[in-house]
Length: 359
Image (cartoon, rainbow, N blue to C red; front, top):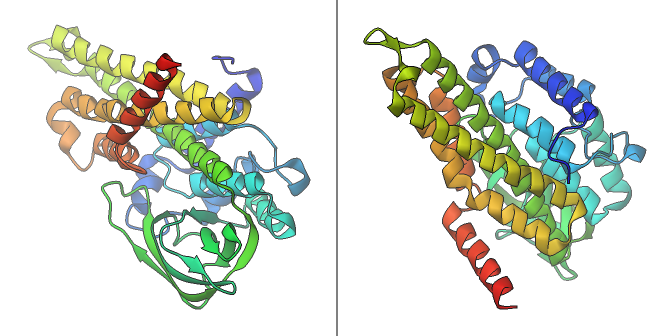
């Protein structure tokens, strides 16, 4: 496992960072979409597709780049640093990895091609209560990301043949999409209801493949959170170098220095874990991949503390709506609560490590 980016990965990072700064800045793009139900600017989404980042994980035969989760993590970190509100994680990671891990045939190939060229926005609903009878969906799924922006919904649900992957158009009759308010306005989540919605079965979904998909999503979201933590830390450090009190820059005060060091330590510890998890998603066995995802998520509470610490450095200005610090804190808090809080992941990591020690 290489902890340093290759030249190609660094170029991907720089290109993505430059695009976001020019076409999707926080002030002129992100804030304008905070109250938008979709969180999508079509021109920006098209720009991401033209860069090739929507198709990073799509196989070459379907028009994608067929890269690894490490490259996806490079992009996710930059999107997190820019507080990007669009459905990239839902479409380019969750949907793409679901379709490739479950091998959905010709229908999946069509969706993957649309993801690669930017014409399809897809999201994944993991099994909650939906059931399927004769290719008709009934029930609800809570917390579906970007459902209002998506034209294609991938649903893991049970029918007579077991758990399968189904696809349904979000504009089909019998589907309702209701916003679920959350702390992070850059993350759009919805409750999706199915009342006799017609669906198409793409593939069987064995438990080990579903577990791998969940790990992929956790790992990519951890990379996004890493980017957000890195960005708000850098903002706070730069502020500490310039802001003066009592005739001195506040960065010269030991208390502020300790806060900055704490943030840096947390971000760099998270970075090593995220890099390993991204590598493990494609290269490690199921046990190591899952443990790396658990560790990334178990560290979520510490990573969220970076946003809180940064606001302490900013002082009163960090609490204002006009400052971006609170947006970063909310992004990190949403990561901390994503698919459950860190405590149960810490418990599972501890249990697995204890089991290893007894072997």
